[in-house]
Length: 245
Ligand code: PEP
Ligand code: MN
Image (cartoon, rainbow, N blue to C red):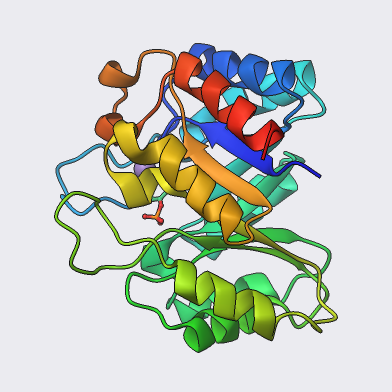
């Protein structure tokens, strides 16, 4: 079966841009769209996301597109509670920076029947990543383990693909009773859109059954991570790669 793709801009920008991403997703049979209301940023002066102010817009989009699941990075358990109580259909993403936020991991792990997308920390070993997932999963949650690269020595890529770790991980998880997916994030690894589709092939070759990709209708004007964000045209090429893999 062809790999699934989560797509959308780095941060939530507007209802219009999100609707364009939703339509692109639906056109190709995908149903998970990035809508990052919260953005952890290295520079405190960079845009930090609209936060819950834009939740009403997501609920309007949900009403119009009931089959869409929104992927939203969670920075605090309080925000997650509000999102959950709103009835929004979403996957909570735990980003690289929060992969060692044990208070958040434990709080999310106290729920059951949820789907979480967990990214590896910037220098996490395979076992550390596996153990992080266990915090989220005492109660039969579905975990999407997302390999988003690690800090290493590459001159051109923003991060180094942690594909060795991904291979180890897949072998270690072979007999796991838990529900999980292996996702690969070529966008944050690349840092530059010219590498994204080739990296996606690397991820698929190493066993990913899902990709998370930053896509924008006008990538050069994306509010964050513009350089690594691909156009709708490049996304169409990626869909062809995935379907013919
Ligand atoms: C993201 O996917 O928006 C993101 C911030 O990724 P990471 O946590 O891997 O840096
Ligand atoms: Mn990003």
